[in-house]
Length: 397
Image 1 (cartoon, one colour):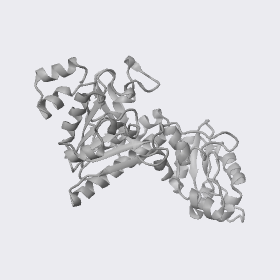
Image 2 (image 1 turned 180 degrees about the vertical axis):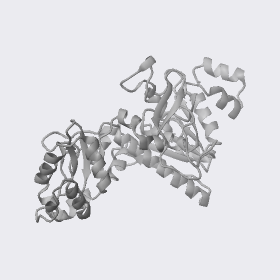
Image 3 (image 1 turned 90 degrees about the vertical axis):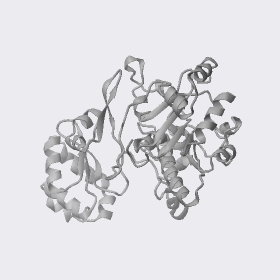
Image 4 (image 1 turned 30 degrees about the vertical axis):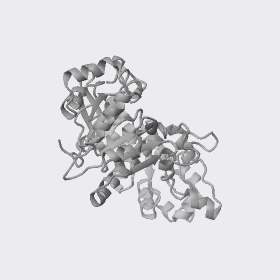
């Protein structure tokens, strides 16, 4: 096994996205991720996603990649005992249940850390482990709203919108992975593990730039502004002659001058309305109109070639089809094709970021339910075939 985390064992007990995406990130860099799933139906993510060829989710092979699937009924005493045995020789236990759930199962921090003082318990929830809202059910969309990103997303004359991905869950998972790495580093000094408490709303809030001091100090409340950032111009998606849009970001003075040269309107760079960052921001709408009038006369490929040649940041608005055809993405292997028993070569995003000496890898796609029961329960815990059969009969695994 390769990767920077190849000496780390993670027991993943969460479901859906916020916890499992954290497990995916750790597994991408080589951690051994043993995913515990309900014996009857497994993680609901096995059924999520709009398209289901062969009746199967196309999301599951990505979020469960590099993981070992083991069935375990966490709601019964025998299943809880299996968790304790797995934790004894693990580095991380990852969960995203509502606060108090592990405690009800006799798997709280006090008990787990007594079994393995070096264990790191990673907890991903909507509101965190403490505070008056902690007991509430918390989904990613609710955390996005509380954390502030929903209010500022969308068009100004419409209700708040959302991004087309599960942003809150993914951010909480990313911060959970970041916290896991920090806790692993601290353990090298102290010899002891700790709890990583990642709340969805706090992960979103952490991304909100200067929103809070803008209100508290200057009395300014950020509002929805659609495709633009107020007073940052030009930076927008502009129409082209072939019906597509091209993003152009030329909001620095030097870059704007280069854009004016490409547009064959060098005089705009010295026009008092557009000569400085502040003046361009004050005349943002009319500047966008000028650029749009020019860009819609240009075929997108010719336009992008001219902008790249001039050193003006620009790019297309990619769909999945565009990503799969892009030569830069191909050259960097940002998309990999992973063998799958039903889908054949399944394309998915590669590991990020890149490490020069200890790179991660997508070693396999999301496994079948209970695919690694014998390996984990037989080889790792030493349960005999008879013992495993008895646990299956009782619905424990």
